[in-house]
Length: 306
Ligand code: NAP
Image (cartoon, rainbow, N blue to C red):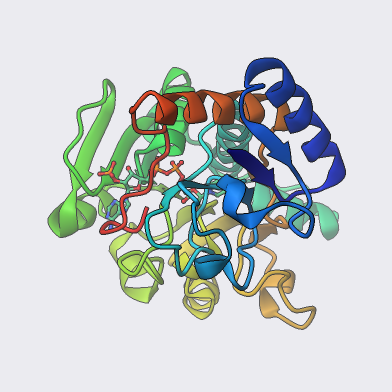
C-alpha cells in the first residue's frame, strides 16, 4: 500500500518526514517511474498524468495538491477525488480577499492611478458599515472570508448552492437568491469552484445586476470570468475596480488589455498556496479516516463537480 506524491522536492521532503513519523504503515514514493503502479493506493498530484485513468489499477484516493480539482477531467474507475482542505491555503486566500475588499472599500485602484500621475485629490468616503460585501461561494474559503470580514462591520451576504445559516451573513442560494444578493452588493467576491454551472458566471448580465460602481474580487478560477465583459464594465463605469488573481489563460498573454486597465489590480494566481506542513498532516488524517471507513475531508461529489 503506497502513497505516491508528484510534486517539487521541498514539498516531497516535508511530506516524507510527516508520513515517516505519523503514517509509517503506508509506503511512501515520489518517483512515478520507479514505483510499482499496482501498489499505489493514494496519489497526490496537481497535474494529472496523461494515463491517469489506467496507470494505477488499485488507486483508491486521488488527492489534489491544491484546493481546486477542475484540472481532473477524467478519473480512474473506483477512485475518489479529494481536494486540499488545510489551514495554510485557507488563511492565505482569506488574507488576499480581505486585502482586495479593503482595497476596493478604500478606493485603492483609483488612488494608485492618481499616484502615477502625481494627482493629490480626495475622493468620497464610505464607512465599512455602509458597504455591502457579497460572497459567491460559502464553502471552506467563503466562510473563512466571511468570518474575517465580520469584525470590520461590513454588511455581509453570501451565495451557495444549498441553503445556509451563518451568523451575521445574509445567506442566499439558487438563481433567485443570486439576483437578490447582486442587487445589494457593492463589493462582490468570487470563491466558487469551477464547474459546468459556474463557468463564465462573472459575465455582462451579472455585472449589470450589481449597483453601478461596484467592485470585484476574483479569487476563484480564470474560467469564472468573461474578461471582455469585465473590461467593458470597467470602461462604462458599471464596475469601479477589481482585484483579479486568476485569468484564462494563465499566464495572461503580454498583450492582453487587462494588464493596462488602471482600475484592475492583477496578481499571478497567488491568492492561495498549499502549505506543505499543514497539508501533509491533513493528508495523513484523511488516509487514516479512509482506512477506518470514514469519508476524507474535501471529498469531491462526482455529480456536483466539486
Ligand atoms: P468548497 O468548500 O467546495 O465551497 C464551494 C462553495 O461554492 C460552496 O459554498 C458551494 O455551495 C458553492 N457552489 C458551488 N457550485 C455552486 C453553484 N452552482 N451555485 C451556487 N453555489 C455554488 O470550496 P473552497 O475550498 O471554498 O474553494 C472554492 C474555490 O476557490 C476552489 O474551487 C478554487 O476554484 C478557488 N481557489 C482559488 C485559489 C487561488 O489561489 N486563487 C486558491 C484556493 C482555491 P454549497 O455550500 O451549497 O455546496
